[in-house]
Image (tube, rainbow over the protein chains, first blue to last red):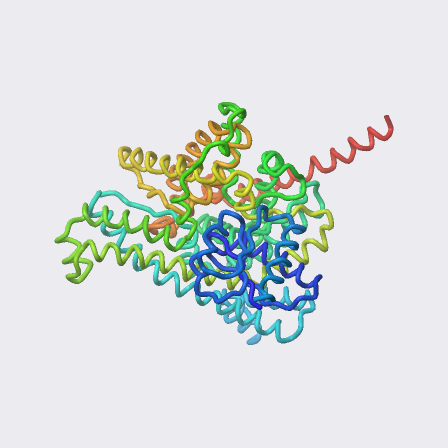
Length: 93
Length: 454
């Protein structure tokens, strides 16, 4: 499973979210490849789950992958819940 | 002796190897498995080489732009872009930049550990850019070797704490929490916007009550945004430079408009490559820094990149961008009228920084605060680079420069102190700044004691 975190230039906020997601996955004992990138690179990345803050996520849906839209970059609890939900959905497919 | 020579000439003067070494130390310190240590170190070194490749793409396109602008308007035109200027600078001052970055991060940890300012700066690419800017300024002021790295790293560590501290009072209003701090080197502009909002704004009507068209959100895609806006700028410049000049002197016969578009898109391509390089350089260094810093400073406040505030006021983000960009265009015409170096409004700084200024202005002064604050911010980042360029040394003659407010403010202050008071001036400045950081910490402790006694 590949998770890609996306932000405007793919340097700062996506990287910080990536570090938090890695920590969450470790706690849950889930193995996944997590990376970060800019909006322009998201389409060709082949990731199973795309993660972004609400404003970025709006533009991720058209790619046709599972999308996690975060209302807030720093709330790791809701990040965890949304991530688990996306992973469950992915398993059912 | 020959080993020492090898160490100095072939290791410490090779910036790519230096950043690789930083990653290596970080990975080993975190006790990562061997295969991760190897892959992380190699990726970091390759990241640096990618960065240099991107610089070569950008520099060609910028040179054509500079020549056309000079011919068309008879003045120098500059496109502020952090990525481009850093990639150019790194060719010559890469080692100094890498050393200042590594030691500067340690200074950040030390200041956070021993003062009441617990900020840990996690926006790694801005650490890198600030290290580069300080290296350029100090080199132009005559610093070299050990004293350059010493002064540069202490100054870098100070900026990594001072700017989050300046932003924090408004940051608390935005997020409603004390936990998260703000790390983006545009703080002076955001705080200015916040103050304008406070004194001239009207909190009763916020930006979030109005609806904005979603059409502009495609500009969040950096590559597209730079490509489209630069194409417009290059086409206008080519029109003024003239068809015959461009086709005879520059394009080798290619139609001048097509040539302008291709060069503008080449600029965007170069920035994309540079960003990929920066991402790879930071891939191992930032998590290592975060891990080590949070261990040493248990009550640390992680300071995060500017998009952290966007979800709190998405409409202010768009209004901020538009107002800042309009101010950039107004500022450009003022500079043309003054026959000064012309700063072309870059879409990236106006988007990221303008948007943030909008959120800060909205937090203190609602819609009016966001509009006025972001407009002031746009003027600020148009005029500041003009004053920065003379103290940048050789780098001041490039057709690009640092864009965000804290780079320019820090550069103008340290550059002019160095110019008028020499290296003594720089060290006095450092001591003063450290006193400002340390003194309130101890006063606070005494204050607590008094309270206990009372």
